Image (cartoon, rainbow, N blue to C red; front, side, top):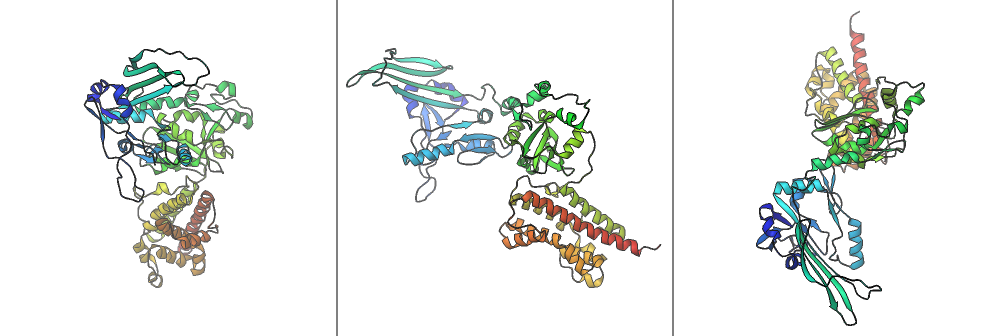
Length: 528
């Protein structure tokens, strides 16, 4: 239960013997009407020594225990499975509850017993919440044990009730022998209050996060290092890792100086979606991950869409982010990305383009060529609010993640087309056929490529438009099939990241073909 800090001393002066057994919040009345009912919380309080205490945990027979809603809203926790809560902002697993064990017990007994099982709450999150609320979390504890028909003799003090303290909190213990029908048996009870105060050690999530530096990560070699190990190069020499890493006589030897940590690609989703984070793929395999103003690191991905981080860079992950990366740490199925070897082992630059970069650069190039030829821009200026950073390889291999990328692409491609400017540069007979932005771009392409070739070039562009419709409605199955068919990809594919790569390559090639046609026309029309 929750007790105001101003009243905690008076609360703890109460008698745990008479109070502890009855301080159970057991739901209440149905909060809404249904055939089965949903016993929730009637907002009742418990009183000890004249002090009101409010519910933190509600024990329910028919449903899993419910935690006080305040901590959920204070830390923006979202439920991820029955009574399991994660932080929306950090993705930390804050409250953990064994849903399987709970449901198994319900099936065996027909109803939930009085046993709570267990619910784990990260200490820092709990203490930060108590601090903000100016409250203590009080545990009222009662336990009774009797030893009957024992095969061995057990001696206890037969001294009745005694007062004691447990960690300076009040408790009462009963120790006595009880006369039964055929035997005299020992019986012990313990009643106590225990208060968790916001001034406890390791009170904040920040202080607790510093302990994360001891969390071990598995490397591609199968070794284990924590960020603290890496920072102090602990174990590097025994593993053959050299710092500074020079003096190798061959590439194979140079490779042995390094080690890598791998993650599934969904580790990046948090930073892609966050307003104060970003992921930027600056080459085919190389990218930067940034978080707020405290974290910026280079990563690479291999052809199996696994994210690789140089072992040394493990030390740069902020304390509070370490658990997030740990949950995505994997033993990779693929190898070290070639561009990571080029950068870190060979010390050379790479000049490839990311898939999103290919498309965005192709759009920019098309606009520049039209400007040179017609002195008009056909794309509106890319604004800071435009989601160009979301036109990115899906962090999750799921259809929704692919559609999110296509939706962002639509906003920086079709929605930036200046239909009016294209009308002004088209011949009159083509200008009359312009309906919207897509048809305007088609007429411009057809004017330079001819209708037949323009139809062919526009296959992937039409496909993007169809996928945008699916992204808006998420149920337009016919548009999904037609859109994927435009790229020669099976609508039943389960390889959504590979589909993304294929789509972006075909789209960039289509835009480049339009650019080349306009550029060629301009060259042919220019005087010698």
